[in-house]
Length: 190
Picture (cartoon, rainbow, N blue to C red):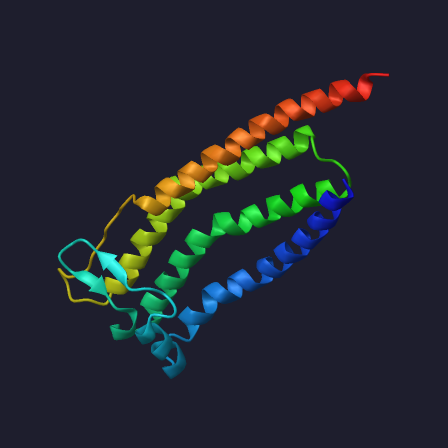
């Protein structure tokens, strides 16, 4: 039990660091995308891989785009859309690990938190990922001349991965519910 409590405290610290750093990591490249540093990182393929569009356009290299306030704003919005469920899940995980540090492991509250995490994975895979990619593709082509703008909606491997992870976490929530029932029954046994 002490090991779980100790690891949970470290995990809470990591979650706190991530909750501050994720918004910075998401926003920084888009805000400074016009700078020589970011352009060099884009050309080298170190950050933000090219966007593949299956509409005969092929690959859109981010460093070749003429960036305006409109397409930068839309690109930031697409990343915020994709990171929102992940960011929310950090707070749910923090509450789970806080419960663990207090010695409350097999509780109905934790089972419900796991169920929320599983639901977030499903929503992320079904709604947020496809919506984010749609907004990103539109952001990259919004400044094109009429008839060359692209609005593509897709459902790919990352969405399937999120759904699979959601299924696993949802199953863990069911196991946690049963474990909490057993834990409650054992607490009443003398």
